[in-house]
Amino acid sequence: MKVKYRNEEHVVIEQDGLVMAENGKIVFGKVGEPLLCGEEVVEVVELVLPTSANLVAEIKSFMDEQGIDYNSSDTKADLLQKIEWFYAEV
Image 1: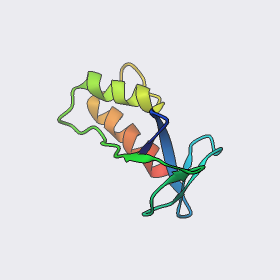
Image 2: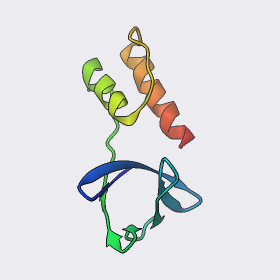
Image 3: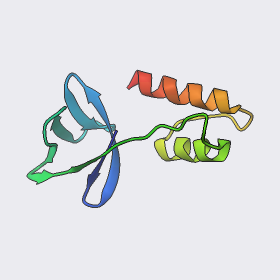
Image 4: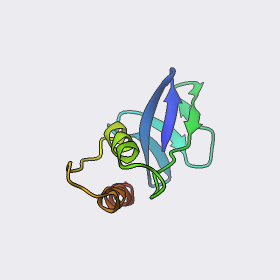
């Protein structure tokens, strides 16, 4: 999931019902409630995962943006599997 805070998008994780930045420094609030950062409400940006309908280049671009590692020789199926594993761990 991503949130927009001060016009910058940040990847966030959900843990124990809380949404927080991956670096663990910012706690935004409880899942399902308006997310707060300090006293500002932040906009939730839905994270749309690539599918087999996407081109390999599009999937790799998504993975680069999300910080997901891949090998240049990975097939489309390999890339999609790595994305699935990455978000299963979060």
